[in-house]
Image (cartoon, rainbow, N blue to C red; front, side, top):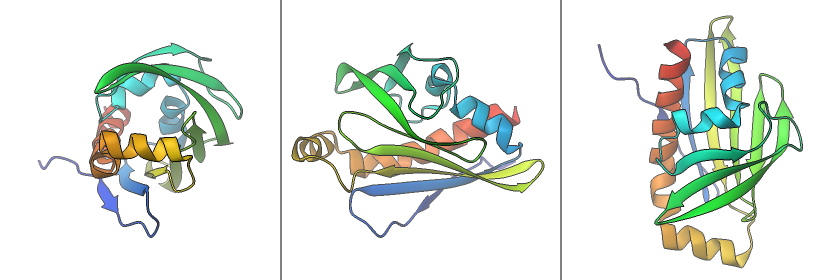
Length: 157
């Protein structure tokens, strides 16, 4: 049996990245995991999420949640949910103003295409420095693909 892989998608805009995978699970099962901030470390393909430190059990539009992170140095980040469509889309951003988004498109009652995207196309100057210093645009597509594979394993397991 081959190892599942996510497809890294070509993007037309600088400082954006995206990946996609098909998961053999209903959209609501996947969305429930994405909407639970304490579950994010379980499918984090980057290894940067250390733990959830605050937030509701289930996210909603305008919800705030914080994570203990580590990219070269430990730090904490507070996110705000800026888009929320039940079982379809969830997007959050933080101080640096880039967004992480998951979009779910049901193929059937038991299969869903999930696209994860990162958008830092309209961010402050200091945030551009962080992207460059951390090499984010080089590794984000691979990390997103790994996250989607982990999400698939959890949802199908």
